[in-house]
Image (tube, rainbow, N blue to C red; front, side, top):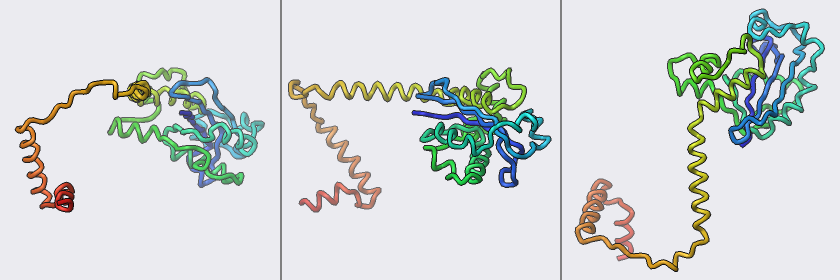
Length: 237
């Protein structure tokens, strides 16, 4: 299973009011393991960042002026995330900005390029109701080292979120292992001919048969005579 943990930084909070993406960072997980294959771009938004946004990410307007525009990196981004499961913290925000950028260059929305999107903020709210569930708060709660995060940065935040996500879903490892073990056991038994074994037949005692019949009678009464086995017996009689 291929998963991409994605984060963006933007000029402001509102894509529908003209704010743009200034940075995108992605890290790749294969079977819940970091592969080291990541994607990272600073992007010229063709407008200045709001003062409040600058305080969050610290990416200066001058720094972005010689960076590629979104249309120049759009296809590379789509090729990288194609068919994957996207993991995003507060997914509606990033997805809204990506859809706005894609629409601006005449490309289909994000949902047409990926398998699905997992919102770790929604997951965290279910797991830790009533608690702070920002990325920093989750790092503290799950003991993920975020000491290098003085400002928001798309690639660093994607790396931290990957660690947070793996910690939040670590129980899945056991489920995967148990499922694999069961499948292996089933496969190993497929070639064993059971006819070679003399298997004993254990029949129910009269008491057990009567107890079973009593239970069926109670169920039949509760369903007002509509149980399937009674109608089948009647039709076959």
